[in-house]
Length: 124
Image (tube, rainbow, N blue to C red; front, side, top):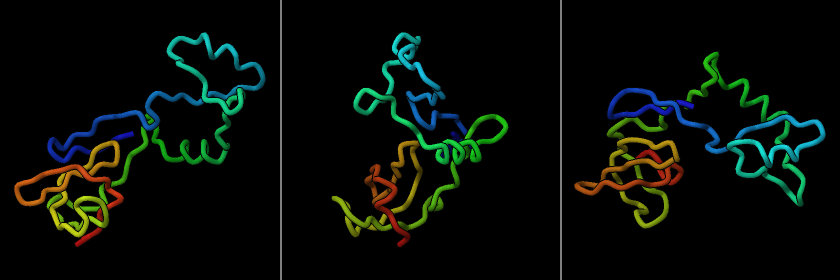
């Protein structure tokens, strides 16, 4: 997946599901325990968890020929006024600066800059 970096105007690939690999297994899955790089399979009551086919299909449709999923441009433009909807900075208005790969928005409040969950922001 690619996240744009406002500061450098470059794109750096980052894993969409860091530390996960999706594997199609017909029957025997115990070999995963001894596979190099696998910490442990995700299981529910000792049985591997199943990702529905429609979820896998959706992910496959979103990636390009290079295998990367492009994340859409931010909801806000750089230096756009935003209001915090809840949390310690509720009702504060600041300027949107950047977005991290973890959904954290950098917002400038006067001389103070902090990272806030992007879902807590709205246009001011």
